[in-house]
Image (cartoon, rainbow, N blue to C red; front, top):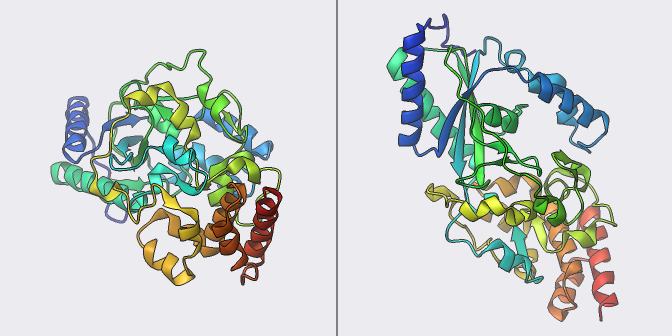
Length: 363
């Protein structure tokens, strides 16, 4: 599994039980909000994945289809995998302007709460690596590989299987005590650890997340059409955003949290304790005109260490242009759009022209 794993350790049942309990304890000491252990049987999820891909609901995310069923077969992705250690880490920054308040101000930019601070891939991965080191100190070398939304892993399915929560109707993981504002990460390992029990689902007849979705992307309970999802449109989609969906995006310039904001279980959400997830550059309620005035160099500098930087300046500008087109008519917005009417990017020019037309029609 790794270069330093020559011979997997053989743990007696009582040793495996003690190690599993220790891993949970070490995880808490390292600041994780929950630790679970799952086996590798994801046959049911594989069927759902194949059907989802066949329906084309992954949109332009070709990597979803490229890895195919490997996503649902941990031992195929990482040979030798027997168990998956799963971890939860809260990310909701306590210092952020409440999301609903930002959405209610169309001249402000809404950024998904997970992206307000440092790139979670780096923060979470470093913490998981520290857990690996702690296990190694205890038992010596062992086979492992760490994932933080960085490879074809069915993280929600694994987290649910290991008892970290249940899959909500919006397809995200939910918990009764901490809602859904958290990241998930995994350690694939060859350690024969005892598994932790799954939790029962507690969504009942609630459909708050389905009704709250601005674009109707949650087409049925537990079914998401990524092609309509604002997170997909503003982050994953590299080209032009379909015109019929642009007005529905509102002022959301990077991702969307509406399904989480509507979920009753998030009344119990816990704030992040990781300092790296604190708000940076005022992105929790930034002014659209101010953000649109950034140069490409300024975008690169300000977004250093942020997950947002990966979408690039053109997509960032495209998204802000759409939000400006959805805002009430404002001379400052019109002037900002007009200043970039001849932008070097054809994609940005297209969305700026659309936004200007919307502003002019709103006069």
